[in-house]
Image (cartoon, rainbow, N blue to C red):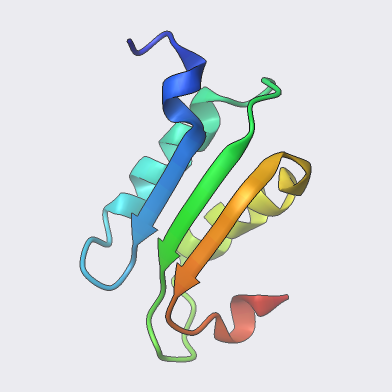
Length: 83
């Protein structure tokens, strides 16, 4: 199952309740690098204006893959990360 790239097409993280999920989402993204698999992103952000460094890094990596996004759903406030 780990070798199946189709399993890793959903990337979800919740910085509010599960901060460690950001690292897991980055791992999922790394598992499908170089593959042309559409991805679905589900995220929950804080409502503050201070971006988490791990989230900033993950969103930077996801930004490079926008052509693969089928879904980008989020809850919370993007603040300085909105660009």
